[in-house]
Image 1 (cartoon, rainbow, N blue to C red):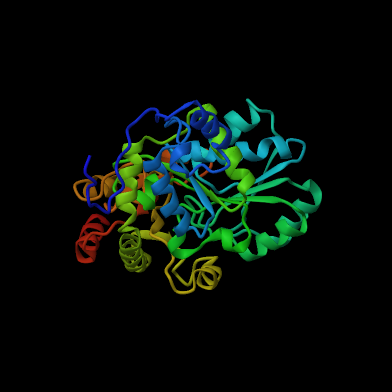
Image 2: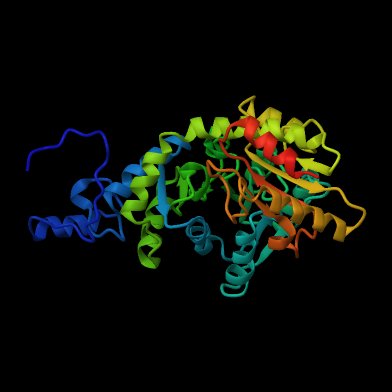
Length: 386
């Protein structure tokens, strides 16, 4: 067949890849985790797939990583990442920051604790910040084998002091896994600070169009890569080639999209902050945010993310909830209530309705800011804040 001149990676939908002879077959199985990117070593799409590998290599470059492994969702990426540390650290306690994605907290409770019996502890924020001195005391007491946190937390948007935390982790010989979904590689590359592994729900900003689900882990340790390939193969966490192909295309506009989302979020946060019907706004770009100075130092002028969490005014919980519900109804034609984030389209989510056990704030809304015209967003939001 004549070679086609194209810059796009073909979509290899093959479930399995053929070999010329038995010797090549034997070599492929022997080398599947040693040289997984070699064409002659592709065996079965559940193991590795060239379309998936192409997308993985682009994400690895974004995260300044030696390698990346894609999975079919953010939660499968979390399972993949944490499972790789379980064998070597099963006797040591694991420490998780408490203000993290609700699905991760559910996974901790229902899988890591209830099913696997791991010794899990949580480190709690106070007044929307994490106290490094208290964290050091936790390290001294627990001597954890693994620490997990988010650079920008979900949904309270607390910035983690990455430099300080990594200093403590190295002092106590603790592995560090970081969810970089909200900050993205545009703002920060945690591996450059010494993190052992970085996770993304690639469904969110890396893809950014609300039409695929994907997860990814990134790292520099070749041993973790080999284990990751093997674990993903065994449990079937592999992303489909078609999804990987679409993700690869969407990555081309990632930086442009995220810059616009950041710009819109910064503008809207300042408008919301001054509105009489808004009680308070959580956005790291505002000077009043508890971790603003830290965000300014860490992100070095590249922005503060594209998420805003804000609370409605009200004399009591019922009044706050009623005002929240009325706002959601008024903006629904332009800003839909969708339980996801990071899309080019602005979306929102009522915090208490989803995480009421952890965040019992009836007037609070998490806003994921998109790339729409800023004037349109301002008009829509101000018109609904009555």
